[in-house]
Image 1 (cartoon, rainbow, N blue to C red):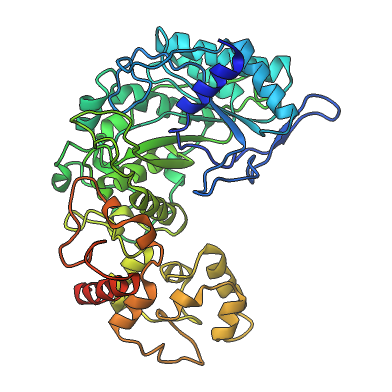
Image 2 (tube, one colour):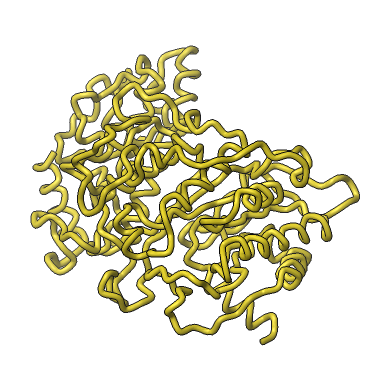
Length: 490
């Protein structure tokens, strides 16, 4: 089989891995030596229509796998052509693609061939060839194979800008049922080691929050017992397991300053293959950010690739809307000082299909609004729909020079289409005067109908009072019925 045939199969096998984003690394080679660079703002310059980065060569080392994860197209029991790159082939392909300006870096993953250690050794050899033979200073992202030895993980961290260990599924029960060859410790141990080797303090990754529950949770979360035991603070793993793993300080090798995986680590969860709620998933992400200092948790809507009674049937639409809501909520955790327990609860464990998480929270807490824009703290401003970290900082700075009105907020970048219902200004001292139904109508997500109503969950039906795709004659009628139902609920 020639190289292009291998490339076709192994890039196709890697397409389900979502952990592909801006690099977080800032580095260039010595003047006149080597090739490539990595920029902290992102090594990628073009994106797919769904927002995913497309300028990395995202490829598997091999699609041979000794594991039999039921959701995976490359599982041991699946009858697919099996191919493997040699380290020399893959390194040469990467360099040739870079020289032709096709790519900015490499995203390397793999099936597990023979054993985790054998697989990691081959992946490390690719990284060594790129760094040392070709003097490649560009961005390298390497997947860590669960179960690989500490020394191999440390060496991979010396060579790669970012490492990631896929947690795959959001509960112990699902992991045991669908990935019988993997254990929680084989995932969490490498995460802890990468954190220690890179010197990242996980407790600093999320901001301190004034309300309860951001950085801790009850050790026995009885509300999360179903469908599988979850991990305490994370919604999946126990506190002891989230603290497990050994590591050490790496020195020498790549990068030149002795740091390992300087752009941090990431992980990925598959969404919609198993019946865990959004609350469980978000608490797991929150725990991972807190304990391991992860840069990103990626959410991948499950695309059915196999006929299995444990999984959604082939042809089931992937839950793209649910994935979208989780990314929105994840951003609120990382940048807006929200806690998972504020956005969701055991009584309301899934995100609303018609409203983005921040608007949903604001409508459920109308007793806190409207805020006087000239007096509210930065922390309170961050809770206002339409106000982000940048515009909140601008407001705090600008109002030192004088009182801000609606026109000033618009100049500062506030999205007044949403924010106007939650702020008071000198020219609008009583707000907009709209009732609750009017505010809901203004905040309803216009993109909801393009996702399809059945994509929110593969396991639970939508509330009966909300209209489905076949219950209305037009999108306008659907929006009006949804508005009335939502306003009554709030």
